[in-house]
Length: 472
Image (cartoon, rainbow, N blue to C red; front, top):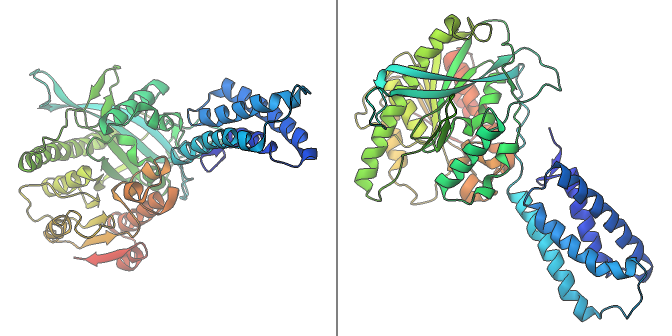
């Protein structure tokens, strides 16, 4: 994995430092000006040349522009030209300030929108990943008018793998191929109303998992099904999924076609979302309930397919390795609502995890699985009906429910977003780049170990380490 500091690689840091040196050389003592400018110029030319070969990120363009302008101003003295005096300080100062401003803008953009660096999983297993696509012959695709169009889901699996060489190629983030990753990133940017360049970095990232690595031996692994947020994609919680896989779980994350921002199918087709808000609260609630019901059915279908996979669906990979009797339905945001509904409808799920999801089941009735609900740190007056509604639903479970509010979090803290989005507290919380994914994984592993593996210990005490816990 690339070493980065403040979102910059070592080569980019060299370009940044050399640009700053070129700007400041004009203001150094006379004896230090020319040597400093020469060193800065040499370092800038070399680093810019190498970056041009490897690929220059747009965030570095202002840095190189500022350094280039400073180099142009310094060129006469570097070349020994003496035609005229040096510009007076009050003339040179605005130029230096402009160059420095360009450099600061670029460095800030690189810091705010870095290449995601995924944390090393802490469990005993290496992590493998693979992608499958399944069609449900019993469900028509409601989003299209074709009567023969069946519901299709794309599922990415992360699983405990045998030891892999340190130099083994790691899986791309967002897609199986570079093209898929680019398509997904652009689709997400379009869905969020952002310029495409804002999400340029995630498609370039590599995760910690190895594609199609042989599965680890030992006992069968419990399975954890995951539904992303509204418009979200299957990879949105990759850091969390890799951590769980390293701890001995198989995570199956779903793309929901026509709901996820964009889904790339095995035949190369791209399916974009048809989800849209109307602005009418009642109509939007009705639509959200419909989307949740489709997602809940997707989760049950995938659980069935995982049972078939265990019986030989992918020979040599996960055959005989999946324990679908120990299965959890999980999800973020609308996916969390889908997990709650799937558990009510499908008793095969033994546990539920809702990552900051408002319940959407219009026919909420008692269910029998334990539930962990992680919620972000709500501001006073924010979504006043969220916690009461969530509490009401959790109390419908005949098993114990746990509602954990994590201080310093926002809605996207429970996803990979802190790894690559601007570190604004209102957007991704105030826990830093990696603490949000780490806490999310630690709390959910404690819950899954207790509910799916029957581990001993005080679960309430374990969860309380991560926030304010209410046991229902």
